[in-house]
Image (cartoon, rainbow, N blue to C red):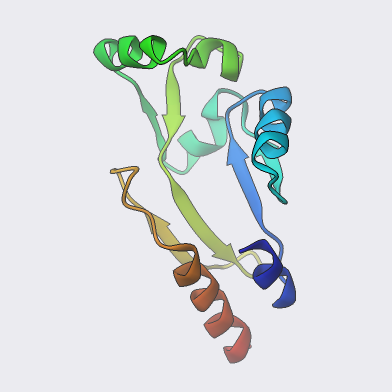
Length: 123
């Protein structure tokens, strides 16, 4: 997806509550080409209404998989952002948005690229 986004003159960023070192580890382990912006405490996600707190039973499931959000995010909140995708134009106008409370329901990367292509063509 990254080369296609760049070929359209756009940039691709991820926003994560994870500490910077964990983002760098993820990029390296998956050989990804993107910048991850850090959102400490999910504060930006909260401003957009995208932050949710994991209930105690789900925290146990995460811990069972060896996932410690407190350590990864550097705060004790056990919050995560909802998965969201936005295309924002140079004037800071949101031209495309996809947010779903079910994290498994995400648009295919090609759908996002197609939306970007449509926006680029109309400008």
